[in-house]
Length: 148
Image 1 (cartoon, one colour):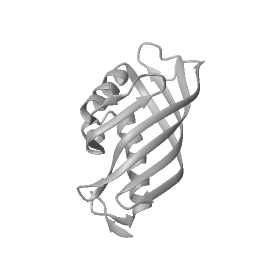
Image 2: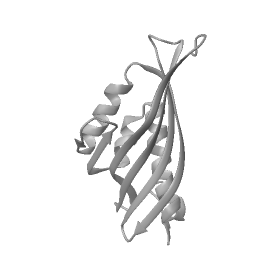
Image 3: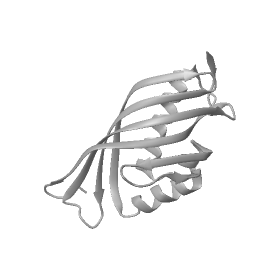
C-alpha cells in the first residue's frame, strides 16, 4: 500500500515504518526532542536494557533528554531486519550499534550493541512507535586521544 507520510513523501508502509525508526535514532543523536516526541504514540512505552518500563511518550522523551544531557556526541547505526505489518499495526526488529562521547570524558567512547523490538501503530496518517524494547547484547568503553 502506498500512502503519504507525515512530511508528504509517498512510500510503502514498510518504507514509512523504516523512516520512523531511522528518524527516532537521528532525533536522539541531534537532540531534537520535539521531533522525537512526534514519532511516539501518546501511549508509548519503552524499556531500555534492565531498566523498568516507562509509560507514556512524555516520560520516554524525558528519560532520553535526561540521559543525553552530558553527551557531547552520539551516533546510532541501525539495520532494520524485519518489518511485519498487520493492518494498522506493525512489529519490527532492528539491530543497533551506538556510540556516545560525554563532554566531561572526551577521551572515552561508550559503545552499545543491542536489538530494538518495536511495535508501531498507524495514527494521524503516519506510523508511530507504540512500544520500544531495547535488548542489550554488550557494552564497552574505548579509550583514545580526544574524540571531541
